Length: 480
Image (cartoon, rainbow, N blue to C red):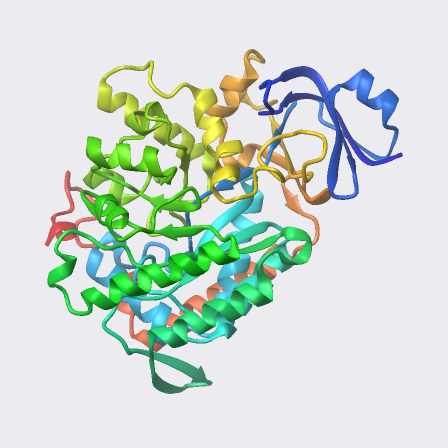
């Protein structure tokens, strides 16, 4: 007997046959899918202890967000989009202004947002990207992991080292007392190894760890610590290979892929974020080395230069979608990012034939599962895979009439249409409400820790409404 039978829905399996089953069902035993097919067949073969009626809903694999930032959830909108206060908040929060309580509260908030939007697995960089990582001590990564566990989703947490020269100044807090201390590359690397040993593959495979080093851009050889940066990147990449971990870098653009290839850190387990402005040679490098790309169509980087997604795909490179969330101006809603992705590249070519919606769906399900090393476990609805399943309510005015559901969930749905979410066969969201989590407690803790961080760093000024918020065609303050 199965534990759960989800029946009477439209199954969008994203399996090898890309089946769409109009009156379909999914049977689950323990944390695994045991059958996917027409309701009559699956129900007859797998009577279940609990039955979920998905009539009027799409039954889909949970989304995989391949690039986001832990910590960002408590720095939303600071500075009103202006770079200086935004980066000041990031640098401060991720080095001297945060506590373990901050990282726990933010992890809970971000994971709850993902859950509400049907994102069952997400990559989260433990900090502000390629140069501000909270890896001075394991306690901050521990707090993040514990926070995610409390919500119940899956997380691939990218930890790594910061840009030389070292040492860098970090701080810990006890009450209102701040203690500064220097942090070396070796200390950060040791912290990463501790977190890998402690968390990678733990809790029934819900938690994984990836490794990260700063991205090297054109002119890096003239910067302080250039030789150390290369040696450190190679050392971290080698350790990732030894442990079978995903190796990732944030902020690739215009020549940085060529540099990464020259120093020998590309390959099938390497995931590069943004990858804007790549030329034909860099596209060919990605194809030859098997390097994968995560495109963040809603990010500021995508405004400044284009990621050549379609050209990469045509060259045989796996490209997936990330939210780059949850800040400064983005959410974890992967429906939004799929739609942004399609329109972004169609606008570039002035041609609506580019990036069909099925490809967009693959980019945040099965393809994304592949680049984070979990394709055998998640990303599609197939017997033997983990039961990460979402139900999308199609009985909504913006999703009617009830034709071509594979188009409707991609073009018209949004995160608030997600009705039910299961992770590993456990129902975490039912009728749009978290089952095991006190949402108000998560929100209150997030507000408290954000306020404490803002006061520690003296950032109240960054909460003021920008001068050109109203009545202008352009906010010139953002480009000063």
